[in-house]
Structures are given as C-alpha cells and as structure tokens.
Image (cartoon, rainbow, N blue to C red):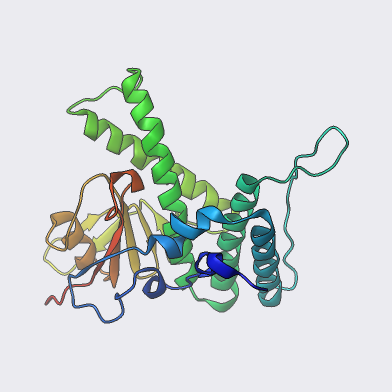
Length: 262
C-alpha cells in the first residue's frame, strides 16, 4: 500500500531503543529525548486519514492473531439513527492505540518479551499526562484544586494520581497484574538492600528492567530520586522521565544507567 508523505506515521517502535534514537550506544547517565514523530505525538501522525488508520487496525489485528489465534477484539461501536457504524478519526486513533497495547500484552504473555509493553506504557502515560495536565490547570484556575505549598505541587500531585489510576485500570483490562511482585508494577516499593539497612523508593511504574517517572520537574542521573531508582535491587537499565508535552520539545526523555559501583 502506498503511504506517500504519511509513511513516517507508520513507524511502529517495539523497543525503547527505537523510541529514543541514540539510546543503544549512549554513555551511562546520558539523557536521550523521545522521538515525537515515532510515538505519534506530533508530525505526520496527526495527518492520518481514516483509510490509513483502518489499514493500521487491520495490520495490528493480524499481528495479534498470529501470536494468539484465540484472541478476539471486543468493541462497542456507536451507530447512527439508521444503525450504521459511526467512524471518526478520533475513534480510529483510540482503536489503534488500544490495539497497540493489546499487542504488547499478548507479546509479553505469549513470548515473555516486555519490550513492546515498555513502549506502549510510555505512549499511554504520555497521553494521560497531557490530558491530566490540561484538566489540572483548569481545576487550579477555578479554585477546585487547592495547593498546600504551591500550585505546581498541587498540579503535580493531581497528575500523579490521575495517571496511576488510569494505568492500573488499563493494565487490569489487559489482564496484567500491576499490584504484586511481578515484572509489571505501579507505585510499588522497590528495595535497595545493598547497605546495612534496607531502603526503598517508589517508581511511578516499572516494566521489568525499566522504571517510569511522570513529573513536572526536569530530572537527571544526579537527581536523588533517580539515583535511588538505579540503586534498587532490580537495577533498572533505564529510567524514563515523562513530562506533559505542553512543557516543550524536551518534555520526555530516557536516562541511561550510569556506571556505578555497589
């Protein structure tokens, strides 16, 4: 199928190395920005037509069925007064995003490969963080979000809660347990037992060897919290910092594991 000027919108990263150009050969502690065009956050993806999105739906569905022949897609389709399906670009975009998550969950369950789920967790959290940021600003403006120390703190706490709840719910719908001791966790304790007394930190999320932190604040490998993530017993290879895209072009990035001694 000819895809013309929209071909970049079909770049479909399945690993963080594909989502963050330059990550594979980056030195420890390096900060690598996310490729917005690959993740469909800006650029050609916004220009997709219904035909191209429907093609992507068919491709994703076929990929999932090839891995899990028993898989089927449960969908409630809105209809008009005559009973005909109502097709919108927004609805098709949501379906593509949902199918990407379902594909990642199937790959993790059947093949034990959590790379695609790391990418789709990034995509999902970015969308939810952007939405929560807009909603939080509106609540602050109308006085319905009360700051204790500062408006920024109140906004950040609001985004944290919203995104965690949304991610837990989505994982649950995918049949992924994020509340136990498995490879996928949301806001769970991660211990560091290297010292005399065990300590712990709470990444917003963890998918196998990657920690995710959604925040309004720019953080580096030298930030105490990030150092704490890297020092935990599960020793993440990367820490992904996700900030609302409204904060600028460098909003989201990954920090490669620094070379440290234990």
